[in-house]
Image (cartoon, rainbow, N blue to C red; front, side, top):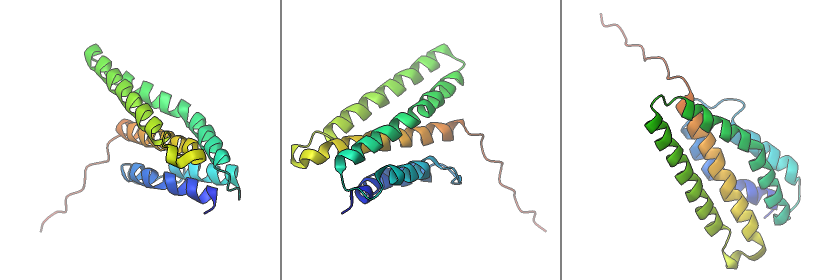
Length: 150
């Protein structure tokens, strides 16, 4: 299996779940952008080390967007105690992500593919978190029209 296809296959389930939380999908959807960038970075290479580097580069590209989304969400919390609780939630999420992805990337049976597993895990978590927070920040949809009865 080509490394690019493997890298995309590893990422797509989480990306699809993240996309489903955001209605409707936008043409500039983050998961689609990452997928395009991964294909561009990987080309036809089957090198899993390259796949890991490409995924790490994508993660660094979306990191400012994640940070900005978290800051905007924190800014919506008027109550200082609620803002502190939200900061605790974000810190707990990051700790879980780190432990989960270190576990995914620490499988000795995966040998030289383990770094790509770790990178895919981190990228998948970060994409999902950006989509989740941006959905929380989006304005609510307009109320559904009720059909008039005759």
